[in-house]
Length: 196
Image (cartoon, rainbow, N blue to C red; front, side):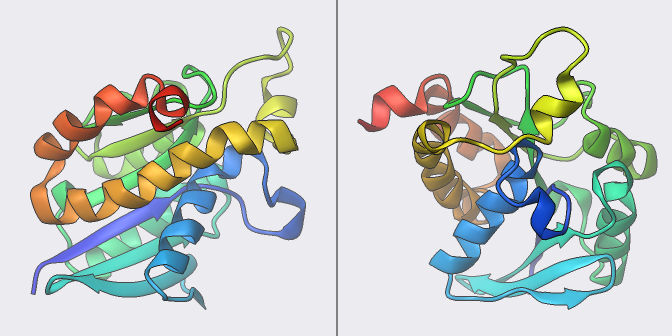
């Protein structure tokens, strides 16, 4: 049976719930709910399992805190013997406006500490889904911004991206990264507008 690992980056604990840096957690929570599966507290992360047309899918929300996300990703890839091409990492991205997303087959970490640590441990040849959180903060206040909570208006803008991400995951599993990028990246430039 083919296996896949879908990782949503974030920080564990109530104090980080609904913060911009936890956009990856939010996507995985939505996908788990849609898949009728629940997370269990396991080594290095909250883990849920589901299957999509005969393919086994592991969902992982690392509990290592963002800057050590690679420890969780490497552990679960190794434990389940999953190739990194069957890994999809969902993260927040300040370079993208809120309401947009970008799916990539590989690439740099873009200054994101979680992606940076994963890259240190397994390289950068893995697919990732970047969820825009915008960059509406004064110089030097990036940490306050990413660890700040979405307000109600921002959550409304984010919801279409989360809804689309929930569809992207099975497409990635069944059709692969290239087909999924072709299908969804045009939506990602203005998810809000196209879904209204």
